[in-house]
Length: 381
Image 1 (cartoon, helix red, strand yellow):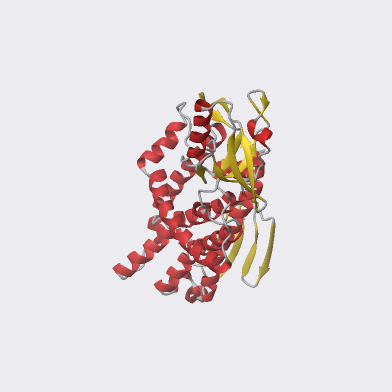
Image 2 (image 1 turned 90 degrees about the vertical axis):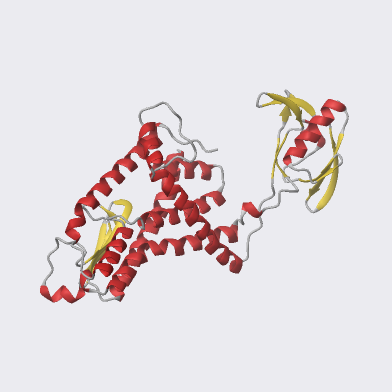
């Protein structure tokens, strides 16, 4: 169920991001006078829907994970009539071709900045939320088979803990220490709890008990606490923060790309196919694994994490497209740089074997992660 729900949320989002990516290529190709004959969202031999406007055919194909723009002259084996030569990709100045190529992955950083801005404006950044006062997320009804001390004291979810005993605005660790000390030193005696509820200060008394937690016996009241929700950010600050978050996501993505696609990361993916080792939360995941995580997170109602994940994935995919190997956009940019340095065009046919090898590896790697996502799904922390 989580996989289905996540796929219904994540795959349409990914399709939109890729469609915008291809629009970047499309816009600048047309802007620089190149001949563009096709713009499709999705892949496949058949068309779900299409329209033709002059020389351009646009539409939708059934395999939604992807899309493409067909610019005349980019395929080295394509034959073009002589009258189209001035409008071919290879006939344009290098700087125009470079902008056209970079425009695709470049859209990812703009879109990600907007996603992060929306995240900040609606949910706020949990990393900036104050650690105190703690908020009571949940009150357990029973503890040790009877009414919990928290329920008996009238503690309610949403209460902010202002003071426990003699400690003002205790941290989670201090909370545990105070409760345990009370039970061990003064068993059966009440502990004063000061909370904020609905803008008012309420004083409660609670008698904690010993209970077993994760194999350890310690004092408990029967509450689950967490930091208060972060404050949403004003639109202007959210836009600035969105750009800064892209910078953070780029640096983090570089680290992940190096780890996942380095020798150790690749070896781990293929090794997991043939051993009994469990996967870690930081292991590589395919769209199947990400969909599973999105489904589980949405089921828990944590939409803040989902929106942030969308922004991060957008940056990550953009950087993958900039890897300087054909057939990625980064490979085309590297080819243009070589052409600029050597002063003559690169025969694109010589790059076909490299493109085939890169794509073969990529297909095998993605296939392996899909198998792992099905047979050894990653457990959320």
